[in-house]
Image 1: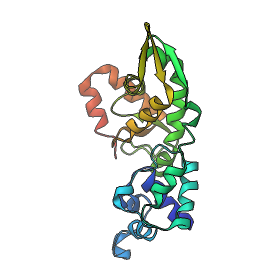
Image 2: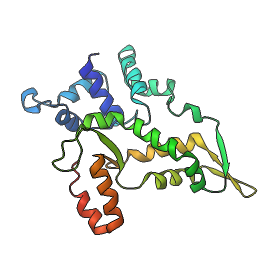
Image 3: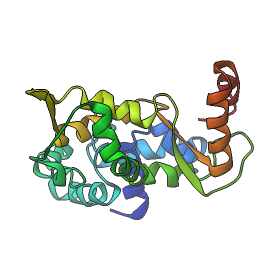
Image 4: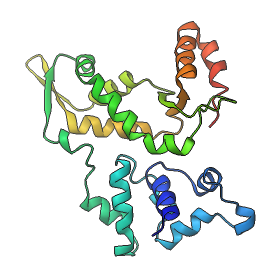
Length: 223
């Protein structure tokens, strides 16, 4: 398995890009190759469209490790076998961990730094593939991961509300299930975008200005 094949499989299985998107972003030419080059690679390793995004909640490092094992199996459903045998390493520290507090928002305040670091690291593969600030005509390569639809605190508290138990007035939260759901909540298309620091700050200013100003500003974010 060569570097190009690993890259295609990484962005297909983890970032959830289609073969068309992969060919465009990686500079492949469907005209010259008479078909999507990335699709030929997926077919070679027995992957189908149903496998897209199956490594979404895994880290880039662990995803690559799993991908390199696919040729050892080379059978239909190989990726499912490997997923069953390899739990997400980035969530393992939360397994069998619970926290008592009075509300979802209190839980978020305790773990806000944790959620920020997790998201920044989690989206590093997509950030590398995007390469440039997604604001129209901006060429800056130093990028922030920016929530586009629902902000990070709301996304986290929504997940927390699903996995809590009332214990005489205090709430016990299951951290593993919460962080797993929190990451999966980011699988929605256009959930995040990648902007330079300047356009990131301008986005927040537009949020405070008005809904219309924010809508107009977001029109210039290119997907």
